[in-house]
Length: 334
Image (cartoon, rainbow, N blue to C red):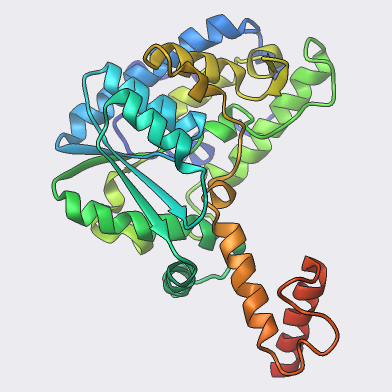
């Protein structure tokens, strides 16, 4: 195992799985730091070092893609603590209230904040634009692309854009959205956590993915400013020392993931805003309402097929029936 580099990098993204030969080799014995308070301090220190290097390097007006989840709120809070005032952008669909956390965080941190509310027609239009750009219609790639295309309009309005920050990568190294089956203090839990994190990193932290050119295809001239603060070799080497009790626990009687990150985030937020660090983990594709809007668009499309409403209505029938209708239409066309 190599040591962490001496200095934090200002590289936008490091493809850690390509840079570390033993990344997929199980090493649960490294996960020795159990105290979430200690890990929260380590997270804060590394976040400050990484963001300090990035923001100084890029200059101009930093941007934070603020989803309202703990990852992006933490990045925004640390940037403010460092003396920066990034422009926050939140992309959401009509009728969704999930921008509440993002709005509250931006207000608490004193950030200029642009909320982009997409109608159903706009979501479908952006999906149509994303598919040829990416060269795939894969669900998670396209729904991740839609907010990027929508945010790009705001980037063009801002003008002198510096680093474009996201919370991406935190879920991978900190097992966000995961649960462990073994007791947290057990050796089995250490092994389970280590295997989960390494398998996710092996898929997500490499250059050759399903869409290798994801950011250039969507952001073009802004692509080289897209920064994944958590995706570095230094972060990886630090995070692989975190034991299960530091990442999983309870808060106000509710089980939470990324425990130490949430504690670090709460400490960085102004008084009265700490509760924002404890929002449940939801993928942006769902929290923004994109999945729901595209599902509704699929129902509308199915409802317009010949004979579709003879027996049941695709606008109200169960999702399995809608999916089957669409597949049968594919068979008919082929």
